[in-house]
Image 1 (cartoon, rainbow, N blue to C red):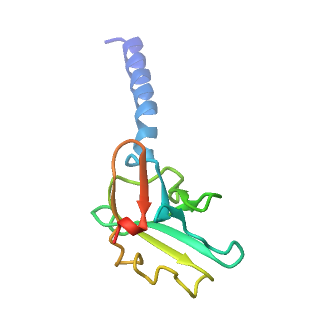
Image 2 (cartoon, rainbow, N blue to C red; image 1 turned 60 degrees about the vertical axis):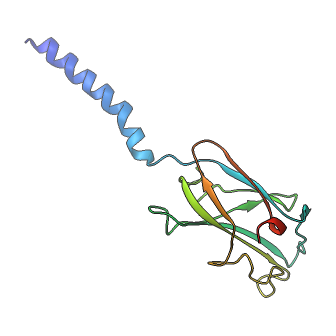
Image 3 (cartoon, rainbow, N blue to C red; image 1 turned 135 degrees about the vertical axis):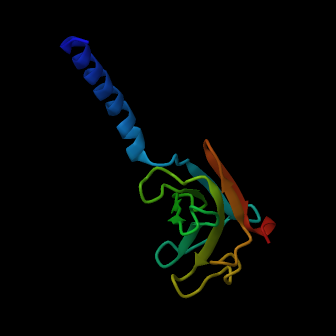
Length: 141
């Protein structure tokens, strides 16, 4: 084997590493999560100055059991997206969806804790691809 073959092999190995390493750094695949929260088909009303609607996805399965990701509520007051802390979406798995309607924040949950942490009956599974969840609280009891 001559030096030319060794250089070519080393160059090829370097190119392969350059392709593989970025994929290793990115970690497990995450998926886009969007949706809409309503009650009886209507937007939950919160005072724009003192109120707040909270939608949070709490992981239930391993390895996401400790995950808590807050949704960003859109200007229509009902639509949301869950960008996660790294802006890439959520890992696949089952999540308990916490919904709280504070008016004013944080003293008065108009939903009386019915969809609060550890109590919410709303369970959604994030799968490969885009995940869009229509949540009508009247149908989730």
